[in-house]
Amino acid sequence: MRLSRLQKYILAKCYYDKKGIAGRREFYDFYSKEELNNRRKSVEIAVHNSIERLVEKDLLTAYGHKTAKRWFIHKAKITNSGKKVIRELIKGGRQKPLVK
Image 1 (cartoon, helix red, strand yellow):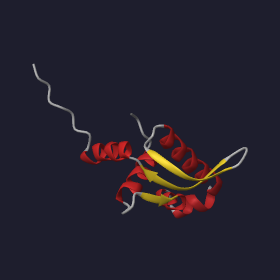
Image 2 (cartoon, rainbow, N blue to C red):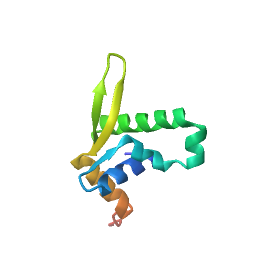
Image 3 (cartoon, rainbow, N blue to C red):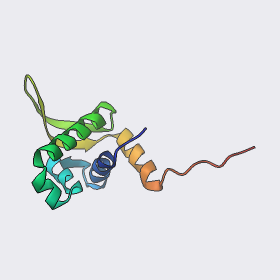
Image 4 (cartoon, helix red, strand yellow):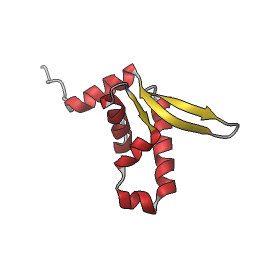
């Protein structure tokens, strides 16, 4: 499974949190202050889309509210399968040795 650097950051942020829950605004730390000030709206969209894609892959659970047109995410919680994926990423994803 391929994950972007932002998605890996989101998973790691939730994984290292005590309860496994992190607020959406905590994920903005991935971007520099300058970039966040200059491109605020595009950063918000990128974080939101990354969280939605992780939810679709069942790596995160999102908490928020839904309107007729849009889903507003406030918090994200890592699932057991998300913990498994991030552990593999932390270990470095070592390959198994080739056996002849």
